[in-house]
Image (cartoon, rainbow, N blue to C red; front, side):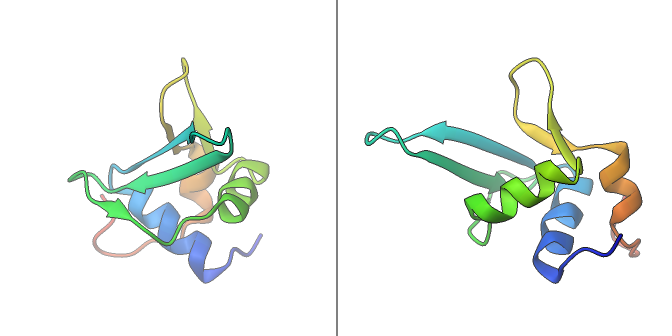
Length: 84
């Protein structure tokens, strides 16, 4: 299964130890934020991309924690030298 370039970027970030957190803002709208392993915010994740990754089962949340990459997500991501 092919994934888009934007999905590839997010999965690379998560494979290196990043996380996705979702929350509701003051107007009760669902918001998502992606952080790399150093805690920096990655601004290019939106709700549509989050739902695509979740539908492909590339990310999952355990025990109401932040979303992280799954084994299936690791298989989908193309390997590169900097992915540990």
